[in-house]
Amino acid sequence: MSLDYELFRLINGIAGSVPLLDTLMRLVVNEYFVPTTISLLLLGLWLWGESPKERAFLQRAVLLSISALALSGILVKACNLIYWRPRPFANHEVNLLFYRPTDSSFPSNPTTVGFAFATGIWLYKRRLGVALYGLAALFGFSRIYCGVHYPTDVLGGILFGTGSGLIVHRYRRLLEPLINLIINVGRRFFVA
Image (tube, rainbow, N blue to C red; front, side, top):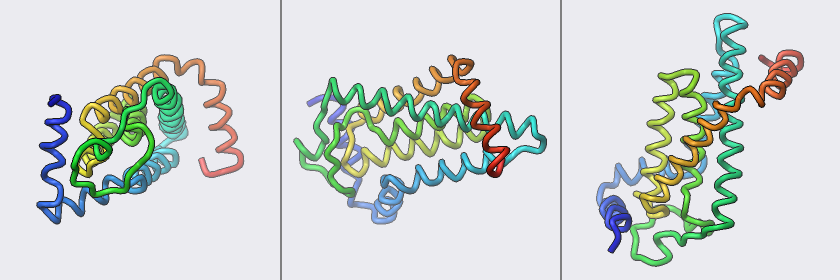
């Protein structure tokens, strides 16, 4: 047996034995709790700032974080077209605490999303970025715990998400005209 599967069994083997932990993992594993939390934090960042300069800085961070999400989605889709991996429950007995997703197990798309956002924010707001990394890591762990991803799927999601955030940050100057346009439109027509 592979180390990946052994680690999966170790983590997923806990599921079903601690009701309070199962409840917490069911809350975290779904596609609503963590993404909604991150979205609300991004909205708060968009509106935050003690000066127009600080607000513009944070708005750039939000838009670059969203750009990292877009890039990570493209990379995950390309990976899924090249490589398809069955979910753990397709080949093994698992303690399944979630529905049966039908897409490829590798990389973990939810983990990719969490780490793309976390990296995008961490590059501009360290403390909040660290908190988002913690939330993204918990999101990834819950996917293993609930039986829908192997550990290497989550590791792949971490690499795809973090890599996307770093790539967008490195080439952020190419996005500046679009970012400036969005910020200006936001200031003119919406709350900014």
